[in-house]
Each structure stands twice: as C-alpha cells, then as structure tokens.
Amino acid sequence: MLIHGLDFKVNWRKFVVGASFFIPCLDADEALFQIKRTTKRLGYRIKAVPTIEIGICGLRVWRIK
Image (cartoon, rainbow, N blue to C red; front, top):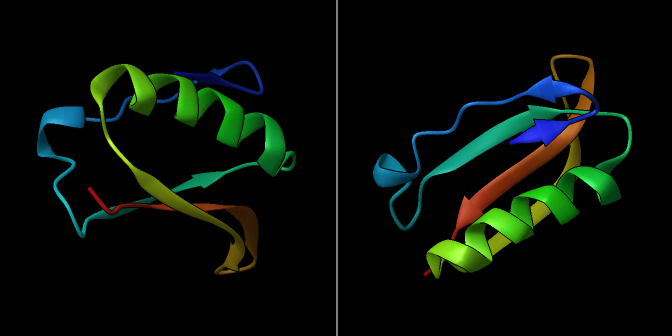
C-alpha cells in the first residue's frame, strides 16, 4: 500500500476484527483513500480516526467486520 510515496506492508490475513494499526501521515484523507481501496477489495469494514500518537500525526485504523 503506497502512502505519500512510502510502501506500507500490512499483513491483511492477521488483521482480525478488533485489531488496529497506525499509519503515520500528514494527509489523512489520502491515506484513508488508499486504505479503503484495499480493504474494500478484501471485504473488510474499517473505522479510521486521525490521531497523534507519541507526537506523530497519523491515522489509527480498526477492523470492525
């Protein structure tokens, strides 16, 4: 998954319901677009929230179905 020119590797098989991950990014809308494109193809439903973790801006993504 390419976000801001960086290739992020997510082990989608282990992304079970209730699990989450954090993607550091400045443009949360663009990151969310890329994530939704992948999760839609896989049939996953997600919830994503722009957040700051340990002083780093990004997007926290949970699998909800």
